[in-house]
Amino acid sequence: MQFDPVLIHPRKTAMTAAGFWRDQTINHFMAQALQNCPDHPAVVAYRSDAATPMRLSYKALDQQVDRIARGLVALGVGHSDVVSWQLPNWWEFIALSLACARIGAVANPIMPIFRQRELKFMLDFGETKVFIVPKSYKGFDYEAMVNGMRNDLPFLQHLVVLGGEGANSFEALLQRDDTPALTGPGLAPDDVLLLMYTSGTTGEPKGVMHTSNTLFANLHGFIEAYDLTQKDVILGASPMAHLTGFGYLAMIPLILNATTVLQDIWEPKQALELVRDEGITFSMASSPFVVDMCNAAEAGSPVSPRFANFCCAGAPIPPVLIERARRVLGLAVSSAWGMTECGAVTITEPTRTNEKSGSTDGRALSGIELKVVDADGQPLPTGQTGNLLVRGNSLFAGYLKRPHLNATDADGWFDTGDMAFLDAEGYVRINGRSKDIIIRGGENIPVMEIENLLYKHPAVAMVAIVGYPDARLGEKACAFVTVKPGHSFSMEEMSRYLSENQVTRQYHPERLELMEEMPKTPSGKLQKFKLRESAKTFAQ
Image 1 (cartoon, rainbow, N blue to C red):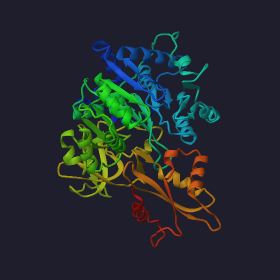
Image 2 (image 1 turned 120 degrees about the horizontal axis):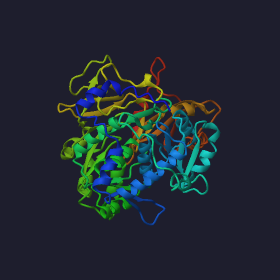
Image 3 (image 1 turned 180 degrees about the horizontal axis):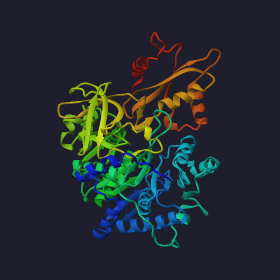
């Protein structure tokens, strides 16, 4: 694959001179662990289908990584080739990430919720050479799904099935002992380390490229803000195929030579038991995770005094939840805001959670600048809402094959597409979205994509999808629909139609409202804000 990380060169000299880009890859930190603490626990992986967790020291993890890396090379994977996988939070996820770095391949984790429709685009656009899937997860047969797509994936050379049997199993292909030692170049600091797709909120998903320098600059700033050390034990319950999971729950523990405890299916009672039994000190996820843990603790699940800090990203945190988490769990919940394109841009320091987390989304990490501008690009005063721009060390390397969409100006400012204002101390509040998205449990719903698909239904005359508040997930989706004369449309029919078109279940609207007429301006423009106001009454 030919990558075009065009946003790297303009920043290289300044970011290196400032000490933000350290020219270190994850291979450096693994070598450090093998020298200083080979027997320290690296990964403790709990699986819902296993009685006991898989425990890997840094030495044992390194051995697995070496074997997998040699297996990938034997399959023809070389420098800058894309390796994709659709795995839950299993230890193999982390091992694959490290194996790709060891041979200079590009890691492309994909959320397990995606099905044929999304996968065909992602695997073909990224020219994926090897794709690793579980045989089964949550009762779904991934092997059968991918086999049914093979004719549409011209670049895919190998399907590897974790938990499968026969010649294409993970064990047979990537855990062999008869492959030669590695000899090729590993990952360089400005090579593309990670290809991660956005959720396609404005059309087809965009492939975000990160290098070790762009990603790790952000992670080092995050480590500093939370004062994380090797003594920390981090809970990895949020999906690692999101940047939150990949960066902050998988890479940060490796950078620190600390420990990650993985949970593959979210279950709050078990999570609190892991917190107690494994001595967990920190985690990061969206607010529904905090709500669920509070509920579980109030129902009698254990609470641990070591579990002190939780970074909450994906949507604003209700102030009542911050207070509840402190009272019930003894947990300081910090607000944060970021994007796949630039990682965690802002956080609220743990010492100021009570004061700031309920009313702001934090302030910029070291090496990142924020600016709020009007429609003409002119800076706005404190407290005034405008377009939020970001510039700095963790800005991505560009969109794969689409540099014209990079949305950066001549001075390096990136247009986030969000509306926000800054307070007098530089804390930001995201108070609107110029991109038409709904954030459901930290997952961006591609509204335009689903609307366009529903428009193709023979009964649908007009459709508009908006979000409405939900106490647990932050938002849910409601589809407002006008029906063509002589036709009928129902919630059951909408769900059937979306499933038939291979739309992942998490993108289905939770509610359908049939309208005789949509609210419009005199010129005929749809007034979505009126639908949002109506949808607020559906809040639970």
